Each structure stands twice: as C-alpha cells, then as structure tokens.
Image (cartoon, rainbow, N blue to C red; front, side, top):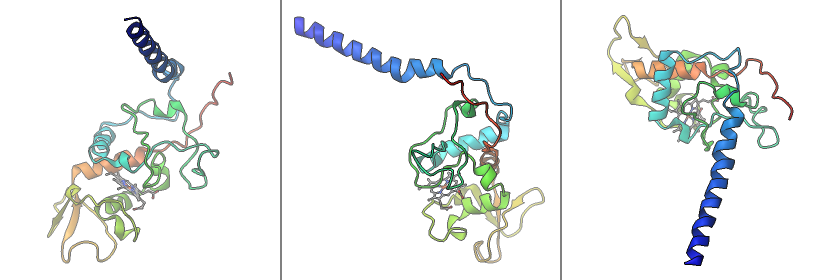
Length: 195
Ligand code: HEC
C-alpha cells in the first residue's frame, strides 16, 4: 500500500509540474500582451478562408512561425522576421504547424499578394512550380464553357485549363486566398521587455 501511495503522489507531482511548465506559466506570460497597432482582426471572409485552410489540412505541410536565425535561415528564405506572441492575437486556434514540406506561410501575403497566382496555384501547383508536390484542389473550382457575369475566372498559364473551357473560382477558393493575402506580419513590433 505504501508503494501505491508513493506512486500516485509521484504521478500527481510530475503531472502538476508538467502542466505548470507547459500550460500555466506560458499562458500567464502571454495573455496580457496587446495586439500590435499594425495587426488587424480578420474580416469575416478571411475567417471563412481560415476554416477552408484548416479543413484542407494546409498546416500539415505549412508552418506559420518564421524562426530565429539560430534555428533556421528563415529570414534568408524570405519568410519574414521572427514571429512574436502578439502576432497571434487573433489566431484561434493558432495554426503554427510543425511540418515544413512547403514554405512557411506567415508572410505569404507580403511575398505573393497576387489573386491570380494564388488561385491558379491552388487549382494546379505544377503549372507554376514544375516539381511541386503540393496537392491540387480542383474541387474549389468549376470548369465551365463560359463564366457568368459575377464569377471570377482564373487566369491560368497557357495549356492549364481544359481545352475550350474556363476555370472559375468557387467562394471557398476566393475566401481562402483572402486569408492567405491577409498573412502579413511586416508591421513594426515593440521589442519585448528585457527581463
Ligand atoms: C503535401 C504537402 C502540402 C499541402 C497539404 C499543401 N501544400 Fe502548399 N506547398 C507545398 C509545397 C511543397 C510548396 C512549394 C512548391 C510550390 O510552390 O508549389 C507549397 C507552396 C505553397 C504556396 C506558395 C508559397 C511560396 O512561398 O511561394 C502557397 C501559398 C501554398 N502552398 C498554400 C497552400 C494551401 C492554402 C494549402 C491548403 C489548401 C496547401 N498549400 C497545402 C506543400 C503542400
């Protein structure tokens, strides 16, 4: 019986230390950090696009956390400055990701603001990057003989659209690109308090 008490007490102590170190202390460190002036809350279209990003598993291949030069040459890759906690103020849930099969997207709105490029790349990544292993997302588009007045035709590189047809973006593709275009962390940040 004595050993069981020790075992249970030991487990509880270990669990409490782990929760404090990994959950509680970080939570109290970042919870009162104000949003940077240059960071705008997401619009409703951008939030819908964020849901499309989550539903299609983009974060299984893309991170949203440019790292310090001592960890990875992210700045040299053009992925932007090191992210700080305040950059994530409006990110619920956060989409930090851990796999980098593709580039970090935390600043894709700065690097690639073009609507046509982003739509076309989602329709067929290999039309832009020959060796790309990114999946194509054809179900976010419709292939038609002729676009209606209010539809967005995707301007694709020659030979990408099926012969004699046009490719139009569905609302989910347009929302997703609005979200990607909003990923711009190029505003000034107040340096963290040296402690
Ligand atoms: C299987 C892994 C994988 C998945 C899933 C994936 N991507 Fe990619 N992505 C890549 C790779 C690899 C590249 C680099 C080659 C290229 O540009 O196609 C890339 C490139 C990109 C780029 C251009 C980045 C740059 O710096 O030029 C964007 C934007 C992008 N992906 C968005 C998305 C979105 C949005 C989704 C979800 C709908 C997604 N990706 C899902 C692997 C992936």
